[in-house]
Length: 334
Image: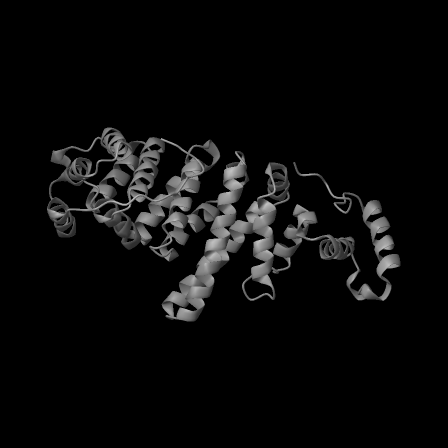
């Protein structure tokens, strides 16, 4: 269990006392020109404690400070090392992660995610492959940290306050390489967690609508992998995500979502063909759930776009050899 360290300070008096002790111990090693505020003094205390005792003694406050000073940004010196230390710290236990989030840490992680998405958008437009690789790898680390936080904190969704934060998750999907399937499924997993909380379900609905309009090519890739791919785990997690989205939508908005699914290939015929060809019982259950919740029928899949008809024809002729992935999702939802 996480225990507060002696330098995890809460009052101005304590900070001043510990700083005086540090100056007496380190003398000229302390850059006195950087001690104009209490925050500056605390930062020096935290840095020297971590330097002496190791990252296992780093408090959540220490990493909050690194985020705020940009020390976890890609262009910052030692940012890779800082991110690895941050991930190790998140794995400590529930109380460490809870304090980090209570101090505003989860918002800072989402801000970092948004910044990466913005930069990757620019680098893709300019076809800057070297930058794309670097920023994509950092994106994976940020998503891994979010996965750890959401898996440890049941109350994590209560820290989500804006639709932009949820949109960052949807936006990140277009930058995840196909071979990084586990990371993609992690994003689905986090979005599903947000779906079951009243405060964030509406934000996910808004994000899905924007995603289906602005990133329809990415969704088409998901649909193609659902029906033509060989990963059973991907099929299960995508169907689970779509089913949860159906559960939280209603009225005209649900009809709009279902219509979008149909026009992009998630049809009754295709689902029944998948149900017939894939032996996995969980996939069969998820398909049945989808058909029941969406209320699609053979009659609702007429007059579809040519690309959807082509997908259905290809599915009927395909013989897919399925593979299993050793992926354990942190949260299991309908």
